[in-house]
Image (cartoon, rainbow, N blue to C red; front, top):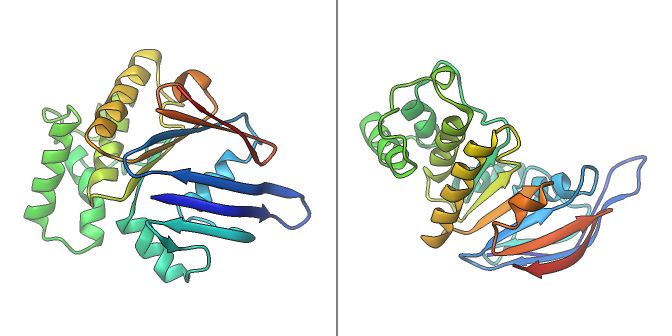
Length: 221
């Protein structure tokens, strides 16, 4: 599903943020990239999410080298192939849960009745069938993250890329969101989780540890 080969990322005036990163994630796998602040995990996340390009090396997504694609092609891949889940939820405050979950379908031109029906199905799947018409301010942090996960699933992406998805949540909501990710993985979803929290990382089937821009070890649970 995901393969990087000899990936480097350099920014002007600094050293290598990523150094010779070789990462393979199989279809259906649940992998966590864990490391402290400044370790390079956010840079790696940006490259895996096609939000940034490597300085050198290759990134293959489902067998296609996306390392040097145009911004237009990368935008299409971000919309169709990757389901993003962010720490800050990134929900639009004036939209309902169903409307937020349906946003990716609006952007691809799906008719409103079809996209709302799809959003309602997904919100029911993540346990929010009773909150379809609530706005983010009427939802707890954990519920908002569930809406974000439903939105990430809207276009049936190749994989879910979750960047510190529990960083803004209390312990109970953290457990609920991690249980949902577990469930999605059991259903066959490929998940890459970026986190600084080793306890969160241990929920994944495999942990990839990053420090100083290098993958230091790959440790199965």
